[in-house]
Image (tube, rainbow, N blue to C red; front, side, top):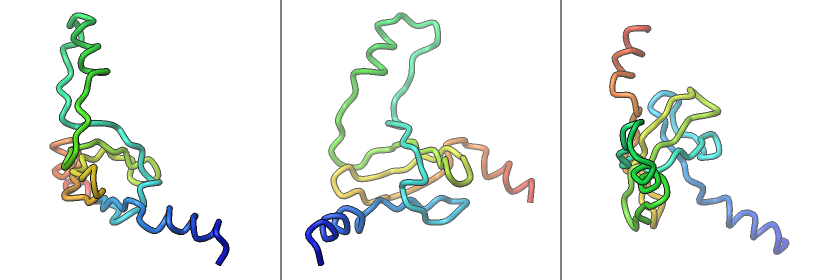
Amino acid sequence: MSGALVLIQSCTVDMIRIKCPYCGERDHSEFTYGGDASIKYPALDAPESEWTKAIFFRENIRGMQKETWHHTNGCRLWLEVERSTITHEIKSVKACHPQIEKITKSKS
């Protein structure tokens, strides 16, 4: 096997797989990373300094972190994913909207 092919395979074998509660397990390339799900944003009329702090000054978490991911090439829902920033292991996946299960079950 050529050196380039080995390098490509080593980069793609351990891709992140996200188990969408509606579409099943999918490659992370179907999703768009949204950011840290634990951030509490200030009120819309809050001072600029509070918004600056919320947007630009964040912890670089080592370990389990809650993140938002948009299933762009699937059901298009926003999901909250609890993922290890060390191993990329995914512990849990759920819809960001607390009422989405109720809404989707009433439609079927």
